[in-house]
Amino acid sequence: MTEGSAVRGISAVTLGTHNMAEAVRFYRELGFSLVHGGPKAAFASFAVGVSYLNLIAVQASQTWGWWGRVIIHVDDVDAFYQRAMARGLRPQAPPANAPWGERFFHLADPDGHELSLARPLG
View 1 (cartoon, rainbow, N blue to C red):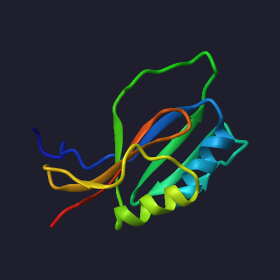
View 2: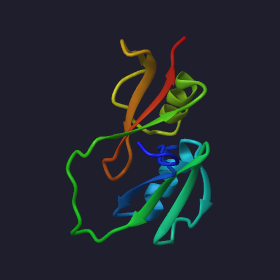
View 3: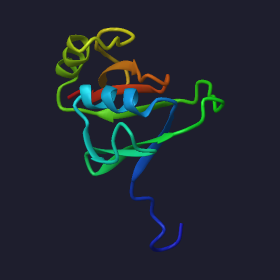
View 4: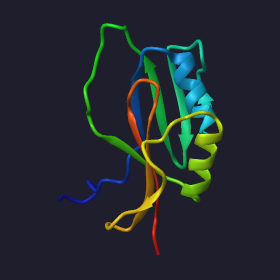
């Protein structure tokens, strides 16, 4: 590696959506802060710490299979789980402690993009 070529972090992750209004509502329900765009925009951006989770409207003909998961660290996994449940969102399972040292639960957004809400243990 050469001087000045260190990887510093991820600035943003951008996910496609077939229904911007529904996707924006989902992320707002989880407590994400909308910083650009909105339900009627072709592009929306949410603050996630010092990074961003972006949504971009795509044609209904655009499809995707399982591509991976976005892992988002939160202060209180159980509080996020309760918030999701209270708003009618359906996580895959209750929070659990993982052998790799995180407490987490998984939740799919309206377009099927998988999120892991997590907190390092210890």
